[in-house]
Length: 407
Ligand code: HEM
Image (cartoon, rainbow, N blue to C red; front, side, top):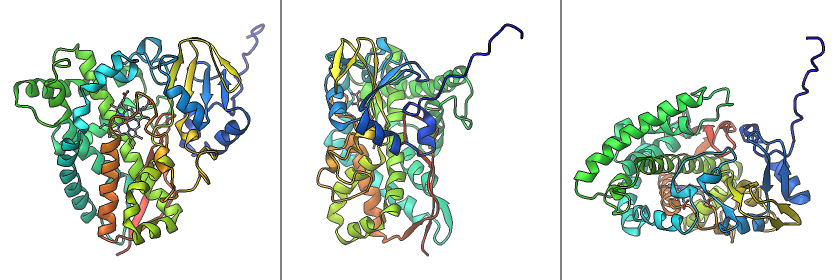
């Protein structure tokens, strides 16, 4: 190898907050604390998928998220993740196109649909809790968080309930990070195969729903929507993918995050038991504390200045919700779970602008019902170990949380 100089490995930037290891090892807090204090709009030159800006303070995140005329979600520019993706759903569109398309899915979370769903969700939560072992260890993530959210997802999709774990497998594969040593797939081609399997199954339900009377599942709602009925097939399947991931991982993670939060703050659990009226606020606080979606990306459409830094047209801009939710200038003692926090509802976990989460009410209801049913049974649940977290820079996902219910 004479004459060929070895290329030195690029130095790791300790402030590259796009590294999945940071969340896998649950080591993100001090990094963001330093960025918020010293360099809140940080340019990382060595990101896995190229350079990007990290926006880490609450106010700046709100500004970026609320200004789609300057910060675009468009799939033509790479979409909403640091890795450029060409998925086309309304999540990867800007107004006015976004506004019109988003309208077609809002009936799914209209008050009437939610009221119908609540009955079902409560019944399932009750049965799931009653079936848990007493006096022996089990995994809260698997037995409660995944179980309840996958049942909900099967209902949303009109997918057979007994086959709900297939939905979990699809969702976990679609979101898998290929650098994760435990990833269920190794290549993009394998991901493509699993996505095809999911899409074909959904399109089969779609075809049936078009011929049937309208129901309240998402497939039926889209199949009967005048605009979506004849939309290109990629747009339909893209939407199924969006709901699969949006409706599954995030709520699941809040169910696990809430359990871990109460384990770390037992006084807050006692406070809730003494005053269950605090539950509505507690749910918002759990979602703030957990921050199930770590960041979302935009692309700058023009040169723009934030906090003294000039972001150039075409630059990738990451809004780190996980950091904004721990911004001490907005949330006092931000690293603590406080169920009566006066401004818990101002959290950034659902985003803030025109793309604010469509499923927020449904997610909040699922969480409220779960904790209502736990309180009703007066379950004393002991967390036995810290959670393990997924290898992902996008979802903050506990993968295992061993617990025991006192017999
Ligand atoms: C968008 C978080 C549950 C469907 C989003 C966004 C976030 C988010 C951060 C992007 C916001 C932005 O870009 O400004 C969450 C969290 C959840 C949750 C933390 C649970 C705690 C759900 C559920 C559903 C859902 C249950 C479906 C039933 C969607 C959809 C969008 C979205 C369709 C795209 C909205 C748009 O682009 O206009 N969600 N989500 N989410 N979420 Fe959720």
